[in-house]
Image (cartoon, rainbow, N blue to C red; front, side, top):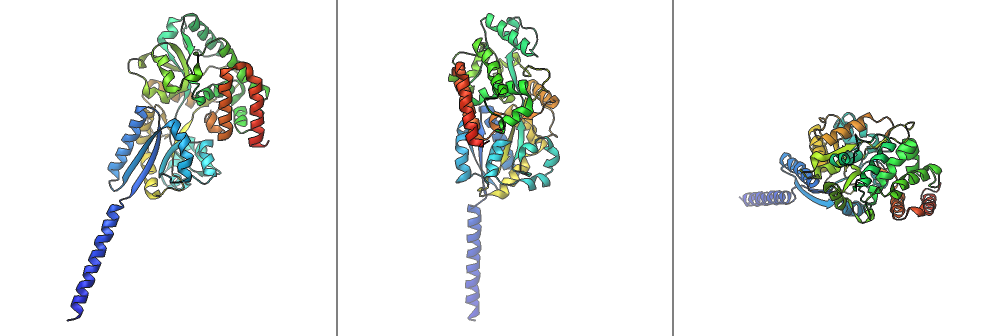
Length: 417
């Protein structure tokens, strides 16, 4: 008889323990934290829709997402990765990724590549996603760089057809200026927009092999080939082909120059197309950066965007599940449309947007190689100094020799070569 109460109490205790455990597991429904860098409402909206689809497919996961403007994101990312890291971050492939992989701050995703068939679907971006033979990135989209232009303004200035050579480009700029239209808008306050000009002038004058050696710190900034990039650029500045006070405008502030018909052309990545006003979109065209030296194989900037799991992430299981969910041909195409880009997934359908189609053709047909972009192909400290130098150059082109000498001192200090 004495055993029964004891058994009863034991049963009660076990039941209570079970309820307690269940309460704890409910309270700790797995949380997945995601930090997303974005530019403009359309980019935020497409990420939100993809995350909502993931929520539906994984109802047991509580997804907490933080959207951060891209410029602020760049500044905050190192702090997140080294302290309280989210479970997923979006970032850039190439040197930008390698910087954190080298410091042990990104999770090795080689297993995901093997298991999920990414080696096949993302073959073209595998190299940019790798550091020392291992993959630390899940590519999402990549995009073309080229010259956006107002078809109506070129026509008004008497420019027939898109400039294919440097002489044709200079002629178009001259005609636009004569017609009272600023030929080129540039957002110099965002230094990376100037880096686009440096990249393309260097790629067209010196080729991708030289460009990559320069990015790797193997070529002095006092080299005549580097100086030629700047003296070619200086011709455009001296002729007054760029908007006045370009260093006071960031990308958001400069685009209205095109939309309002005050400037005719702008060198930029196709990611801006999603933000074009509907009334302006039909007037916007896009062409490949002109050939300067026909003997130099044509290379392009085609930066790859990517997702990563920080090494200090708390919920890696759901983070891997999120990557598997996103890295499909369907989601790739969805992101590409919303981000004004091209899906990095080779099984995604070709884009329907006319400008993205042109970008796709440019990158598909390039014979001279694809670069990741100035501040993604180079170690961060040197890239920051290089872009600061570009702003100084645009501010006062006569200081070119001093700027290059200063950059050369910086190169020697950073690379010790």
